[in-house]
Length: 236
Image 1 (cartoon, rainbow, N blue to C red):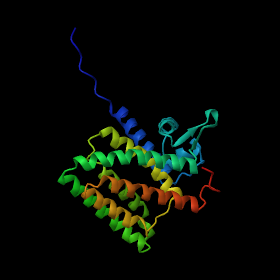
Image 2 (spheres, rainbow, N blue to C red; image 1 turned 90 degrees about the vertical axis):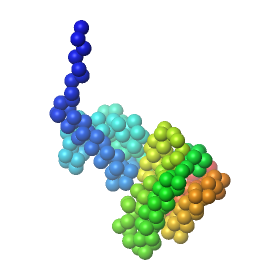
Image 3 (cartoon, rainbow, N blue to C red; image 1 turned 120 degrees about the vertical axis):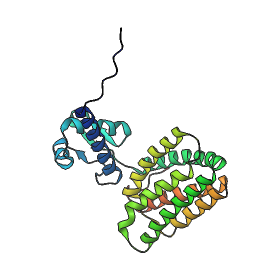
Image 4 (cartoon, one colour; image 1 turned 45 degrees about the vertical axis):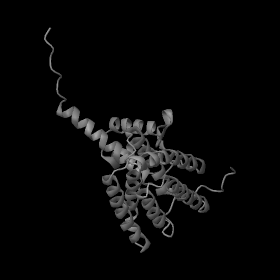
C-alpha cells in the first residue's frame, strides 16, 4: 500500500487555532495583570463582546485557564476568576523560592560569559524602569514587572533544564498575579536587592544569592499582609 503524505492543515483550521491561542493569551494576561479581578464572574455574553470571540473559542480558552489554575469552573454556573488569599500567596511564594533556589545553584555552577552578559543586560533593563518608578512615573509599573520576570529568569537561565525553566515561568506568572493585585513596588528595597542579586550571580555566590532571594520575597509578603489586602493576617 502506498502511504499517503499527511494532509496539510487548512487555512480555516489554522485560523481557528491562532484565534484560540490569541484569546487564551489575552484572557491569561488580563487575569495576571489584575484587569479581570479575583472572583469576577466570566460571563460568555460579556466576554464575546469584550474579546470579539465566539462562545466555543472562549469556552476552550477558559477550560485551558482552569487547568492552569487561573479560572474556576463551577458546573452549570459557568466560570469565574480564581480568588486570591494570604494562604495562596504564601504557597506560591514558597514554591517559587524552592524552584528558584535550585535553579540558582545549577545556573551559577554552569553559567558562561554569555550568561553573565545576559544577567547584566537584564538587570540594566530592570533598573532603568525602577529608577523611573522611584521618580514617580507610575506608567512604568507594567514594564517593570516584565523586566523583573526577565531578570529572575536570566539568573537561572544557565541551569541546563528546560523543564525547570518552564516550571519557574509558570509559577512566576502566578506570583506575578499576586504582585499586580496585592504587592506594591518597594523602591527603598527592590532596587538594591536586585543589584545585590546581580553581584552575587557574577561572583557565583550561591548562599549569598539564596539569602538575598529569601529576603526579597519575604519583604513582598510582609508588605502585602501589612497593607491588609487579604483582611486580618491569618494565624500561622
